[in-house]
Amino acid sequence: MSILISITSAEVRIKINEWHRHIQKFNVTDAEMLKAEIERDRRKKLDNMRAYYYNFFRGMYEFRNGEYTKAITYYKKAERKIPTISAKIEKAEFYFKLSEVYYHMKRLISQCTTLNSFIQYL
Image 1 (cartoon, helix red, strand yellow):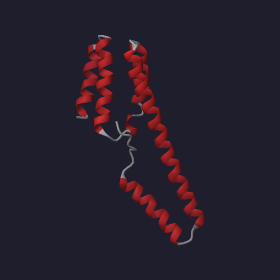
Image 2 (cartoon, rainbow, N blue to C red):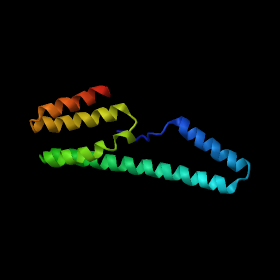
Image 3 (cartoon, rainbow, N blue to C red):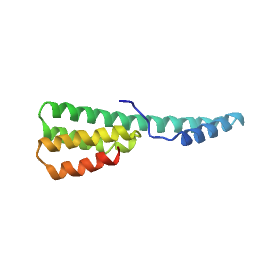
Image 4 (cartoon, rainbow, N blue to C red):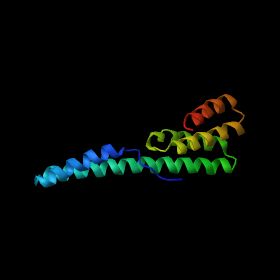
């Protein structure tokens, strides 16, 4: 499973080009402020991704141990961070795992809804 930051290369390019322009013009204060903004954005995205993967893997752990309610709790926390993940296949995997828990809990309506999300990312 690869870790991908959900920021487009165009956004990165724009910020880096702006930062570079400030450096060229010797606008030290503006360059430092933009650099700090870029680092804050990066740190925030990484923190969100870290939270996603922690809860996703913890949900898988709880599922494997037969703790289905706990697994759902962790998966729901991870689901709030799904926008952080840019790879469709990883989103599909998440919804497949969540539907697997619903299946074992015999919550078929929830499972069908989750499988629709799974199919959306294939």
